[in-house]
Image (cartoon, rainbow, N blue to C red; front, side):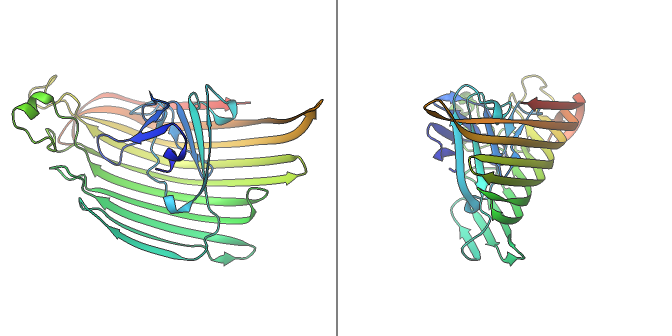
Length: 322
């Protein structure tokens, strides 16, 4: 819903709530984020050379109550947005200070429960924002999603970040879920429950822990900003798309594995000046990113038990924009 504030963007889901969303912009399918760059609190969400899909963008670590604003762009490409902004980009900012401490407990249908708490006490010349979210959801499925999500944010900030200031933000996320895949129409016609699962052991587990710092300084018509980040990311995604088509004995279930450490930095300066009678804004800078992927693998599995490795690799992905 946060991203759907961007005009023309529609978000949906399949194969379990813990998986990255399916993104659509102006009616075009952007898969799991391959053409839509997303940044949250200074840290990019998209993953290159990912085990499931190029540009995989899982933003389940977002805590909506902390969102202070969403900046977006749409169009063929903007160099300052990085590799995945081929169709558009969004930058989601977190608040640095809350009006008052908040605690909320929620419950709903299909086993939905959520607990949220946040506060931002004054600390020295800045504010220390702390927030925690825990939720679970079963969904309408015969095999419950059992999506258990844990999010945490710790953020220290000083000054006005939009003018002169800096912040250091830690974000942690862990999710585990079951997944109900698509069911063939012939199975429904034969009386199989459309909320049922032909392979009840599908699902996944993922985690993401990041640390980012942002510094900004403005003088007159010139604004300079520096961003640096590092994050540890893991995913085990277990799916069965063809059931018993290829292996009638053990089934066609597969496990996609991704283990990586990401580091990067972005430095840019924006100047407002005049070209004759026109006021123009010029931005120049550099950004670098390094993905050290220790494992990107695909396994043939049965009931989440590995039978053989179809691929097991490591990779180093570097990108740089000027």
